[in-house]
Length: 323
Image 1 (tube, rainbow, N blue to C red):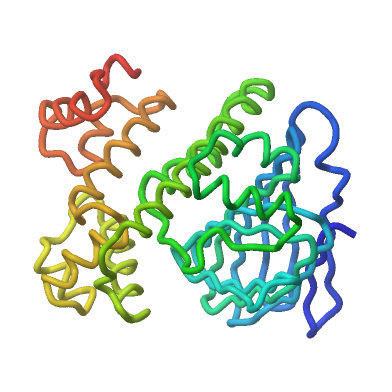
Image 2 (image 1 turned 135 degrees about the vertical axis):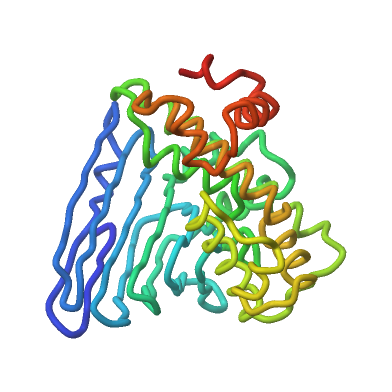
């Protein structure tokens, strides 16, 4: 079977065949499915015992779908929007991924509900066959080695008991995978490098939480407001609000916004915004469709010189050298 996905309201089923993991080269699939209460689109890539899956759903109302799988897989979950609950056979309890959360899991039998608590859902998942993951992670840090020991023992496990927050480095890595324009052979190599990078970032994120002295944000509501503040900054990248204005928009006091943002995203709000602007600018420069001046002003820089200075400081090359 591999993987089933269905609703109770109307007959709906799709399966991801385990055999897709086998074979050489890079396999790509994309599909759109009309759901009882909306539409789902998905892209997936298979190579070297690895599957990358990106899924979006747009719904007419909040709903949920049942799913189950019978394949032994290690899964990196990045929940970009919506809420997903996962129950692994052999685990004590289900784990739930909310917006902007990630985790790593191993299981041989799994089932659960994809609970779409918003009208839009976005999910990014990388799955490994056992041998592929153990080969990649064998030179990892102690946390990854302990996780690998559980896999070898056949014990279903979560990498982190508490879900971790998706930071800008991870988000940029995901975006670079989804927007990759390389030809098949180079794309496969690129995907492998980014898969390893995401695993490293995930392991480092876990270590950061482990060595953190305290957690400032105690309630889900406050975390949700911090993520809202981030999304508002991203949506208003050309003319962002001041920190005081952003705090009011998010419904937080300025101190909680500053400290909470640093806890969730590991940098200040405007450091995050600056890095995001430059990453987006670099991607547009690589595409080569717009002149440097247009990109600079689209990213909210008041002058080409200001943009060039910031760009060179971050990437050690000038924008013209990237083009």
